[in-house]
Length: 151
Image (cartoon, rainbow, N blue to C red; front, side, top):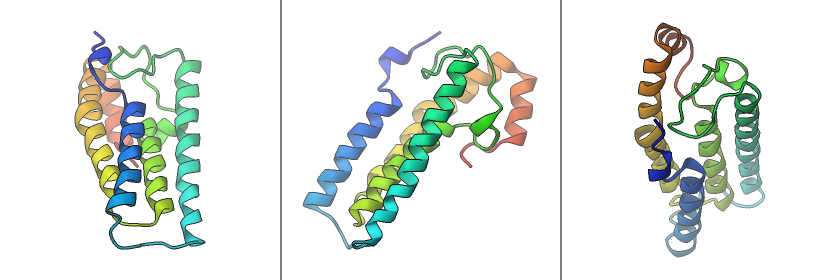
């Protein structure tokens, strides 16, 4: 059931788009949004994103369900960060990239943030939702009604 090896995994997208942010900031930064010392505020969403990813992965491993995209889930997680977001790992990755954009302080590094959001939605979230709907049926439908996709 897993077709994950054919896909670039989300952490790789994070790294690639983080490099794109640095390149954009260096070569075509656009207008400055934040200046020092205010750019240090960019560390806050990054810290929150890292904690969210780590908490989500820890919970999945603790409950014994695979955390690799498109691997068949053995359990529907609806506790911890999964009570607030159906995709806390993807939300955390997006927060990390937004943190980099804030820290750089210019406009163009926000383009990869939007790109990550769209890539995660199209390549992962929508496909995973279909797999979870097929695997968990009514329990997943109830979860969809209770918990938002992102926040």
